[in-house]
Image (cartoon, helix red, strand yellow):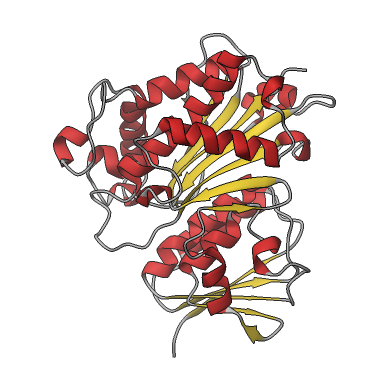
Length: 352
């Protein structure tokens, strides 16, 4: 008899619940069918959505993934789940999708096929970063144009930012997107592994609940609480992929996530501080400019912007608090399950 694992997702899911799903999926043996059941279509915070989406990818590589939910809300699939990124991830990884008992798999795939950008009511999403589809990783000038259009969709005038500050936001986003293109689908990830990746830009007025916005332990909440306090407005910048993950990419060990967590911590901290690039060992991604400085640039830009960010990869969570001077990513003391890929999720204050 075929094994079947059923995960039920409700409308009120928070980060803690999403992490519990990640742990459960990681503890189940591969193979069989994973059934994702929605009791109602949730309006998810991106920090919940990318966790769920990334957790599903390993299941799709070793069995079937089926999605079942109630009838779609007005506007169809593209308007129901695309604003958080979860809809796109399910479209990539699900073998079958039904809503209200109707098979809509082909419709969902058409919804996301060849679409460079998907816009929900609160967010703009650029998909397939690892393939260079919606963002050309060699053309920051074109990305700047697309970014400014995205801001307009969100009702955030560029004039809200000083020119240099706006360029820092764009540069931060582009650096993170380049990292996805250069690493997410590369060695030692098995060839032909199907992955998803996206850049999400959202007006942070929607995300005002703290604690738990990112799933950070109490010792790191000060900066996040400050940026989500009443009257503060911010941009949400999220770059996510469900590919190889930082530790496996840096160590070139595909089994590192099954070993002692200390090995993973050393590999991630080396990647965050390295001044030399793994590209010279793998010869599988483009060499441009001064290599090995990607996370150094991201650190510096987050600090200049006074942003608060988390980096979730494998079994680890690193925190950056740009509300304090001299901030760098630091590993949080957590006991997390394995999540495929890497996600950078940041809140950037918008000047009044």
